[in-house]
Amino acid sequence: MGFWQGISKRKNTGGRLRLARKKRKREMGSEFIEPRIGTYRKKITKGMGGHNKIKIKGAEFVNVHTPDGAKRVRLTNVVENPANIHYVRRNVLTKGAVIETEIGKARITSRPGQDGVLNAILVE
Image (cartoon, rainbow, N blue to C red; front, top):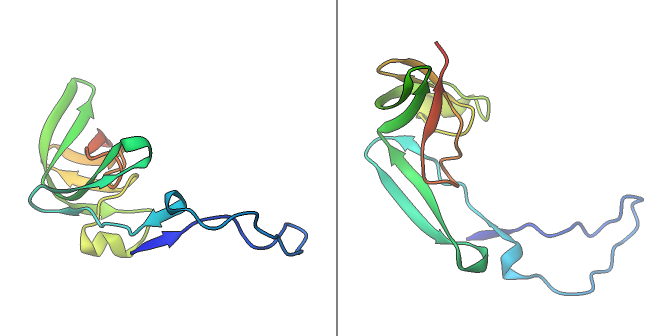
């Protein structure tokens, strides 16, 4: 199931906007797949121009960038998530979420639902 994300049927002034064409499939959005902590699972979807998007469904490791260099460490849980307060309880991983790892707290800098990779920067 997708969501059409085209332009509004109203102008900024409030007047009606008469569309010159119908909807296009490329203008559709997709449902949000909640990347969670668990075994690594992914979903590959078609993108525009023949490209593919890798959406992470589950991940147990994250690439944490420290002053010493990058390390691949295990995820423990989600501490804080500015996208939605309920994502903390459900351990949903989104960009900007603060996570607990083996080496300390880190903030996610990648978009797991779009990139297919999980990168973070050490906070503590």
